[in-house]
Image (tube, rainbow, N blue to C red; front, top):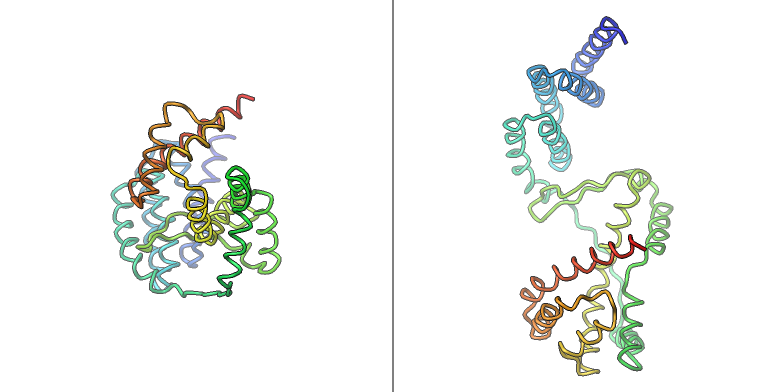
Length: 285
């Protein structure tokens, strides 16, 4: 491409950017702004990058002023990330202050949706008894088999959800923390199936964790489990490294004693390390 052709293309893009701003076509303006910012960044002209992004940012904030707190939170987070990507840290920090202010408002806008289903105590007790009957090894294998997430099952679950509520599968998922800050945004199912799978597994575990806790309590009482017995069983698997034995014993003892905070601090790093180690061994096969 000749220099004259390149100049003409950039001139046309700048005109499109200006028209989009005048027409309040924010999406078109954003696309043009990103292209221009990337171009001038490659050309080593930071003053042009800053000028374009600040013009877009000001119009963007004005255009979204009347939107709900949740939508403004999403859009300002996009603007914040855009500023950071192009080195506008001071401007990004100012946007971050607004994001924090919107966090509490966005939480108040959320509407709680409850779905209830009754399960009798007898049904729960019968299920747990069936799961934990037999020898310790049989009960543990049955428990692990039931509660461990299965990728193919989750994929079928997501497919079922997309058929029952197709509009949801075309929308991004916004995950907020307790303060209303955006933790992450998951693209629509078709564009980001892997993260949807992970998110759905997390939701499923939230639902089943109360049942798992009851099962663990029954196993402990029925088989008189202590930290030594549990760790000895774990070490029948080759993935457990000998140097971690003492940490596992201390962590499991803390759990059995009801000191859950200590148990979490000890056991989570061990579990993370086991996952990494297992992944590395699988990669070498």
